[in-house]
Picture: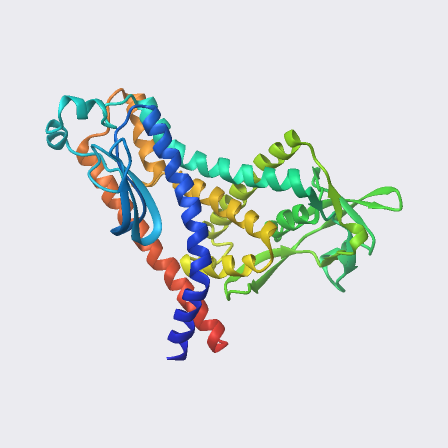
Length: 384
């Protein structure tokens, strides 16, 4: 009973902030689909935030139903010839029942390029939102940089054996420039067991040091197990070591795009490590984990919160581009086939693809929610 009480109270207290964040990100995603669809002459029947029964809705002057629904984990834009909320195209018999005017505004009547543009617009809107948030923060508060200074070296660690000393500054790893400590952590963390050549600045000299990160298994604050490479150094967080750099608007925009790309790259690397079993799939989380993280980030202030929103937006955009039927990437996969073969994928194959995609997403949701519940259980009972 204590477990259920804690779980439900946690969901309630964390969930409100998370749903506000998710609603904003989903709205931008669907708005991308909506605006490009209108631009391409597609008739939009519904713009929904959430799934299931409607809480509130209204019609605009173009006849689009704008609605909020009871299941707030997503949203959709429904076109005049869609069969359902996943933009599954209607069959030929259904399309034949449309009037000539309705067929002119149907999604399937548009060129492959137009349909692909409408589908890709959702993820692109997410990427743009992330880049704009990062750029705005960079332009207004500056860029905070914590260079890769070594504050202390752990005894008997790979770093000590390689010759690292307190006060060293790491400027490159295997020829890749290191501007901040985060760069160091990202490279070392994904390189367990692989020798790395560090270029270290010490007393005005550049020294090459070779260290092989150890594989370290840890649990995060939410009870999830993950493996990462470590060499055994502690970073310096002394005020004098933190640099705040003012940047111009063009620089802020470029950095915003770079940070968005970095988020996506980090997600791709994480998924690959799970697929190759270098990391445990246990760390994959669902809505409960996202709600917990959102609540904790919200306590840190507006800057971290905006960065978290940008991170979520970039990753929602990327995940929607995965080539899974029912997702935007699955639709784009079908359109690529149509563009190459000069004929659309058969209705039967599309129907089968959407069914497979739905099963895959359902299984994934069951898995990540099970992970969330088990991690809450482990934290409460102190097991695992």
